[in-house]
Image (cartoon, each protein chain N blue to C red):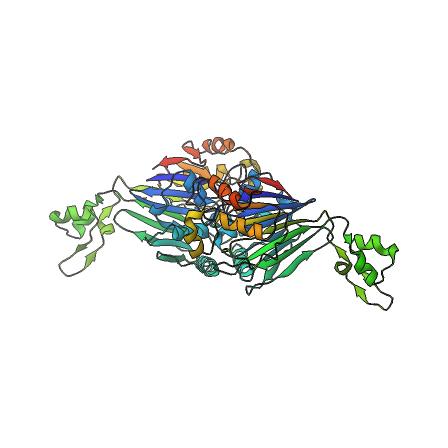
Length: 302
Length: 302
């Protein structure tokens, strides 16, 4: 799994920094998380193969996280895309996009599927296949906002031998359990794979914590992640602004990463009040040493 | 009057070219014509003082002409703008913008005024004050589209002496006529200034012909302009595409400029099928020598 940062500024573009957008590459497939204005230009700049994007996740409806989406959807049509596109997003977004498509009499040559996430706050599995899983969790911002956990599955799951014995699963079936299959007992009872296996040692977990105030309310959702992206809109000196505006400081992001027992932390979503961003990493590292401050064009392997 | 080109590509951003946007500077005031995605970033790049924009004109609702508008409106709010903003646009745009403001619970600290132009095709004066006048005219595109004529008024209007005598206007009033005042006859009848004066020799006229197929249907609207901007999406070899898609070639744009007796022609809105744009100017110049092919960052004085 590889993350590429296309934008890492908050609210308004400034100092050459663009609004939020990240590409997650898993095998030959791309996911886009958030899509601020200009994201399609950033994709060209950083050589992202737009046609390989199959899923787009929108965390919330502040403009710096989605104003570039209609342009991307429109360009996909003009570029002759035929592959379906799946968008996971807040409830109000489909109508906003549709109104703009209608106004231009656009006819998209591909299937556009919206999957809305409840504004009331959902913990849901959005996508689950043999290669990866995407789930969402609510964070705490001024408007309904969700973070996402993306898990690239290891090829083999780890057997929970005690559980296998408890359900009397024969040894010849162990290989299929490792491949992710469920087991059907003789009386027809289905034993879900997850009841008798654990994530394989190769599972890779990326947690995107979106825009949020500092809170441990979702720490269990992101526990043990190989990489946590957590917003850090402000430096410690401006913690009052962070509290007022439902955002987080770099130090608070580091505290969250520590509480979640994450392996690594990536910062981003810097306020345009800061021309330079070096201090973010320095402040966070005092609490959580394995921190990197994202910059545009950064590629980070999980 | 000064025009600054912020974007000149059609449909999708490509080859480092951005979608349509132009700044018109008159005295200390800025107008923005069209606002493709990324326009606010282009404004930063080219040192445009965003706070001085008072009017925005949107020609039509194809995305490459307005997808950047919501971002600009939103950023104006975040930057603490208090000056009113007036947007002249197609009928469907206010609802599209409002839905996005509502979704983010945005509260704008400035007055946002929409003035819609009838999709049925309007020839209307949009703004008329002592410094400049803006009017619109319908062009012929796939969806309702308008061009704009912006006239910077000369300080002194030219007296139509014959008309002045006909209405028996006393000579002492001539100075006020030159300043643009109307004359009230003794019986109360109002003689509109335009009935007894002509545009001063210093009037400057810029005509923006938006996206259109080749037609002379609006040639009278732009007749004699000091500068005509006319789209030239295609080169002559692709004239069939121009016809099919309700666009124009460089040669056709030149023919329009010639028919309108314009002083100068500026091309733009190049298809992304062309990596280089030199040929546009060369083709147009064969018909209309005083042609310039716009490029991003171009400043052109009228």
